[in-house]
Each structure stands twice: as structure tokens, then as C-alpha cells.
Image 1 (cartoon, rainbow, N blue to C red):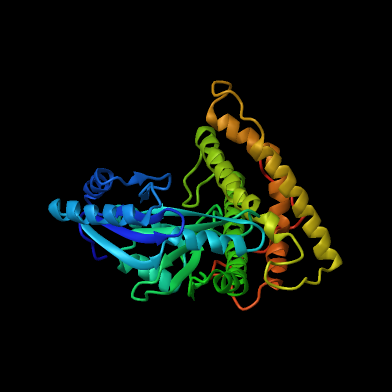
Image 2 (image 1 turned 180 degrees about the vertical axis):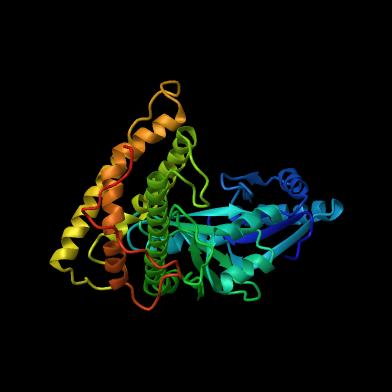
Length: 382
């Protein structure tokens, strides 16, 4: 992306402090020195402000800052925009459910590169972050826990517009295919208009995209688990690897540890997303019709979720109590009834969740293998 001046200060107007200064650039320490030398005080969010609200004193301080900056090769830009942090706070107060706002400073271009990894956007916001120097942004965080974080930036090339898009939700396992990622909205920054656009346009799409993403992750995990289960059954039955190599007891024990790890790892994806998928509604669609057989399977899955989460969150044993492989074996053994329920009924959960989707479709995944017969004798040695 294009780089800005190595030492830059951006000045914005704020009704409270009056002037807000944002230092940035590869040599942003020089910008900070210029601000401190001319009477600007650092705030908690990394910005600077002149401590007195007297307009005359502030004008004099800005003039002194410009002169100091010129002598020390620091670029100073006075933006016509209102300070982004003020706009974000006004927007947050108008969003339903309780929201908070904070400003993030990306003093170094590398800081902005990290921001790109946090985005969940298929629109102009992602393009702006990867092609334009963005020294600061605002993050909106909902208090309900079901809303994604939102990023607000000044729209490049448009003095009176802003881009608002979603940050990647913490969903356990990241997907490489983000074709269902939401698209940002373009707003004027007027709080009521922006809050309406977020509530009516952006958040419903985010909720639906997250629902679709959860389905894909659980489907992929279930495919992995069922494939590992079949492979392990065959390995124990034949005492040979897939290429026909005979297995002694030591090698078989080692493969058992690996199998347990695979099953627990896949099961954790179900624990991450199952609670949101076992309900009768998605965030963006009306209630779905649940048959008696489906309802029974969903009840079993909810019980499996409860049991699995209790095992996942129980206090760990002392580090020296047993070797890691033994602890893993015990955890998987304790969780096996819940894992087995998921293996048998997981496709019901996915079908149920798909009924609650609207215009989006899950990402392509390996077709699910058929569930094993319920009366099949299992060869697991635990």
C-alpha cells in the first residue's frame, strides 16, 4: 500500500478538547516529540489534545506546532472532518442493545497490515484497508455478545462519507473461503442515519453470514470426524495402516492417541458453534418447522453440547499428575458418549440449520458420509 510521510500529524476538530492530534508514520516518535514540545498532552487512546479549551491558546499552539514540525521534518495535516472518535461514540449510543466505541491508532503501516487480517468484508472497506494508508479507525463493540465488532473509517477520497464494516467474529476455526463475507455500508457519519444503516442493512447480513459460516465449519468438522472414525475402525480391525503396513501394540497405541486428538479437535468445533445452530431460529429468518424425529435428535445434541462443555471447562489436572497422552485419553473417553451422539446426529443439525438460511449458501465442503448404524459394535478400546 502507499506509505505516508515517515512522520505525520493529523489534526481533527472535536467539540470537547477542541483539537485532536493523531501521530503516525514509520518515524512517528518525531511526531510525538513535536506534539509534546508544543504543549499537547497524550490521551488514553494514543491521540493528543491541547489541554486548554481557549480557542486563542489553541490557535497559537497549532501555529507553534506547525513551525516546530516544519523545522523537524514532520508533516502536519488539518482535516476538515470531525474527529472520528466523536462520531463513533454518537453512533454507538444509537445502536440497539448497548454499544461502545474506541479509537485505534495504526501509527506504523505494519499495524494496518494486522488490521486487514481482522476484517470480515467483501466490499470497499477491505479494498481501502489494503490499498490506502489508514492511520486510525474506530471500533464499535456490542454488549450482547451476538453482534460482530464493527470498523469505521473515513472513506478515502470522500470528505463527508465513512465506511462501516464487520470485523471477523471469533468463531473458533477460520475459513479460507470468505465468499459469504458481508459488504460494508457507506454512510454520511450523521449518527441517526448511520445507526439506521447499520441496524437495518449491515447487521442482518452479518448475522446471516455468521450463521452460514458456522454451518460450514461444523459440516467440515463432522466430515473429518466421521472419516477418522472409519479409518480407526479399519485400523483396529486389521491391525494395519492404510498402505498395509502391520502394526505392533506400540505403534497402534500411538495411532490411538492421534485418533483421540482428531476426534476431540473436531468435536470442539461442534462445541464452538452448536449452541447457535441448535435453536429453532437463525438471526435472519423466521422460525423453522421441526419434526418429531428432528426434535429428538436436536435434544440429544443439546445434551451432548452440555456434557462436552462441562468436560472442556472443567479444572485441568496438575501438570505432573499424568503424561499428556493419558490426560487426552481420559478426556476423550469421558466425552465419548457426547462425541458419539454428534457423530450419529450431526447431519440432522446441519439440515436443521440450513433450513434457517436465506439468500446465502454454505461454502462447498466434502459431502458428509452416511451416519453409522446405531447398533453397530464399536471397536474403540475405551
